[in-house]
Image 1 (cartoon, rainbow, N blue to C red):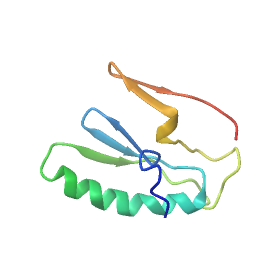
Image 2 (cartoon, rainbow, N blue to C red):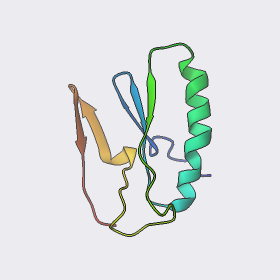
Image 3 (cartoon, rainbow, N blue to C red):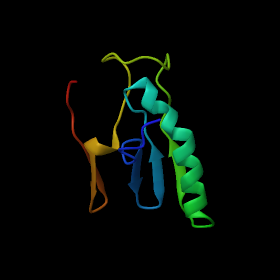
Image 4 (cartoon, rainbow, N blue to C red):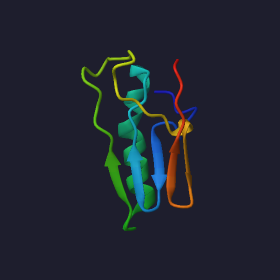
Amino acid sequence: SNLLFPRDPLLVAGSRVLELEVRPPHRRKERAPVRRALRRLLGDRAARIVPMPVSTPPDRTDEDGAFLDGGDCLVADGAVYVGGARQ
């Protein structure tokens, strides 16, 4: 697991924490440890962790998969802005 960019697999919007589906298959292993850490940090707060559906098949990295990276998102004034790019 590479937690060098821990924001990548997450997007926080209000009281929701969205677990994102990142493109590199080896980075998808980060979801479970990040989720455990978040649950400990959030405790009894009224936040909700919402997982993004997993790409099918899970090792898919082509353009047809649905992927989103927290570094591509900006939350401002109640709106979520998502940048688009081809890798």
